[in-house]
Length: 325
Image (cartoon, rainbow, N blue to C red; front, side, top):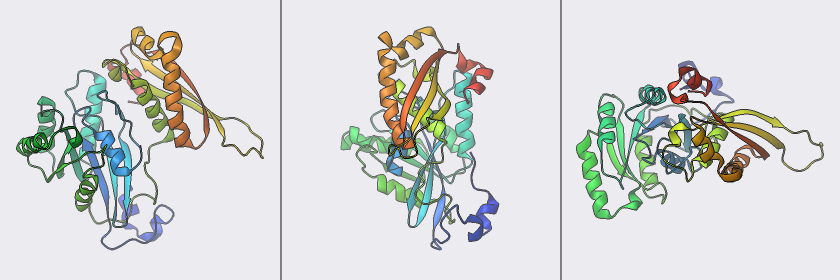
């Protein structure tokens, strides 16, 4: 993770000119919050709800997040930078170990940790594993009962009691990111844990992820819809190049971009799943992903998708590096 340097934050308004607005209240707070939890605990959906716009991919399949995607929450009294991480889990591959290392590295660099525990599932070994990890951190932890809209009030009360018994938390907040329930309450709780600080990012900026990463995540999200459980762990997406087509100066339409993307799987059978019969599924992936990419880039997009086999890439250090892990 790359944060603004100490020099930038202490050199005064002139050093930040052009980066952030030059005036802010004396009680302005700004800092970083990290969302953790086992796979499919609702972290990405909660990130999007807090920011108010989609900045992290969501899927019904576990372990869809591969990068620490930041969403930025702006208020008059502060700025909260959300870091969404892969789910902490007991790793079975080199990729899994690297994702866990990424989470642990992030935990030591933030001001508050958000521990997501879905209300529609009982607390299990994965949650206890994460709770033990968080118990070794000095950073305050806010436990969040996600997906609160999916259970009865009685079940939610039981879940909150189970969370309380799981560890020592700075706060416990039930939230439904989909319904928007208690999202504002959680925001207030997190802002209260931030240090006094000038703004860290310009007004209106919602994420600092590179466009290539966001495009790859949108393609990945589309490709994960409606597939078997085995595929999410085996799918990697790389944006190879983006080229703008020439056009006349008086053309009133948005620019046209050629976006070339490779999807990598580990076995030929997985390639067949992604492509589908007669290429129908891959065309559907392209159609759904293109809509999000055009909204992201503000341009018309021709999306060129290719599926390639990189055998056992999750266990191959060279392939992991090539694919950006």
